[in-house]
Length: 331
Image 1 (cartoon, rainbow, N blue to C red):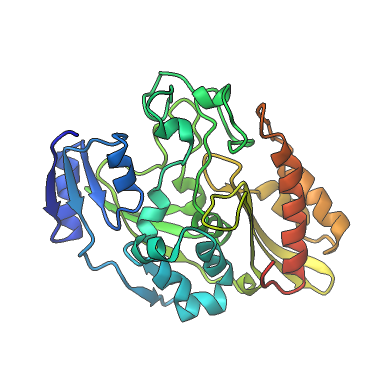
Image 2: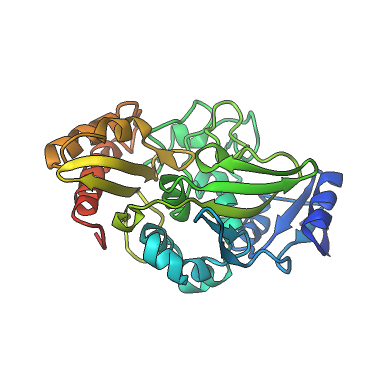
């Protein structure tokens, strides 16, 4: 292992300045994913900038009704927060469906956004991986790829984003607050993560040295009807084959508003905007949900081993929308 220095940041500005001054520095908070990558020699930073003591652990109500969630709030604290459980249950259910209690106790909101794919070809340095070594090739494209992407992939990378929490945040129109050398800025959640295209080594649209300071949840009046459905090989701490975050607002029998996001299908949490537009004004019935599911998967391009994901995703969308139309709750 390459030697690296460890520095505990005294403020957000201090952390950002250190990262800007050293292109090979990395931030560490809970470390639940980064430490694994260090052990596998996937990351070899020149220094680790510890941000875990910075004052970013609060959840605050904003004047406009939004919730501002500090980047260092743990997954456990977020899932258990009374406001989240009451008004954004879709987020609580997504968090509780991922990882173990011990990991949730350490994992942070900011770190969850920045966790990297669990593609086995990325983790095994014996295989070619454009995400690990740009330009080297993608072993997953012709290898065992039953867990890989069916939407938004490229010739360079077919990996999927692993987060459950991020799928719910995409559905809730969250905003990511970041701070860098040029000051603070906000990034709509749907624009925060990137598709692979020709730069699969870049997972997000963070600028060099930028640090996530918070995630902002806008008020969504019908979020209480939210459903998070996760389908996986086993229910014990397994990543999603497919996941669906859905919430419907009804006016009588018609759909007034809708949120629909997918996990396990793309390099980023996938917001099904075309399906959402189709659903508005339609009857909340299985025929409508079936059409919406077909629209959501129109651009799907399966690989040799993951064609099953298309039909599985469609069925999951229909089921999640049906449960949300009935008031939400556990699927």
